[in-house]
Length: 431
Image (tube, rainbow, N blue to C red):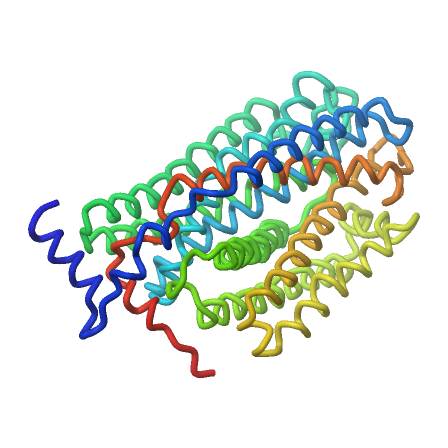
């Protein structure tokens, strides 16, 4: 390390008359345990995905049900990672010093975005090349004469679809890899100017993230029913990503604190602000969800209203009511209380609920679409073969959990030489 970098490192470790060297000890900023948990995640992934595939031989929906259930899990896990990428970008853009000790976990989640995109691409690519439009009916040659599909052929065609998936993979790999590389390089060199470089790249990165996330949501979710269109769809999926992303960050940080890590680096002040973000994105998702519903109800366009009509029958209305209560009212009322936001143990429970309701949201989006096929309803209710849906979510979530744990164990738990580290350590809430 150069003398300049060493001096910069010393200025981070010593802020005024306060020294933070004892907080950055190896045992506090490294997590080397969790081998049993890692094995559990892998076993869960294998068992869950295996059981999901086995569901293809079940009576309720067969292969179609399996494809839909797997896509529920994959789209949900992809949203979590996209939430980590968004939070990383916005924390750099806002120069949010308080979040420095939480940011590494956001970076870990962002780094898995390309992996989860590959997982989320399995079903549409299988549908494209093997089952020929079993779930994504726009891929089925039998519907080429459909007037709505003909009008959308410029966008919904196999070649352009595959090109878009490749573009998302490249863009998200560059964004996540660039920010993570700058952060880890700063750990090694202590170069404070890398923080400014990360902030500059986050400016154009946020635009790239917003556009690519919106179009990915069109391709992976909305195109399942090619007759459906919504101007709010991209923002809706982004809201789900931010909602589930901050819940996952809080869950990881709280569990690390319970494991005896991050002592003095992540405290109730940080959980308080993270809890505010959980509250904010609860309200934001609700606002977007209501806006989408209101606009579709008001315009009364058949292709749009059919999407909601099918979700008001055969038991799907109860899932709708669950989302109204569980995705808005419950977390909204709970997170209003200051004591809840400052309690890691309570936030663990809230975060787990938020992740459950997030996957319920993906379930509500995808599973009823198999009943809105142009050739007539299949008739799958929310409880038909429900074990397949549970197995898929547990399996793909287990895979994501194993990969996240591997990332957490392989890098320091915080950005060790970020120039705003003293600000994060001394952070206080006054409201």
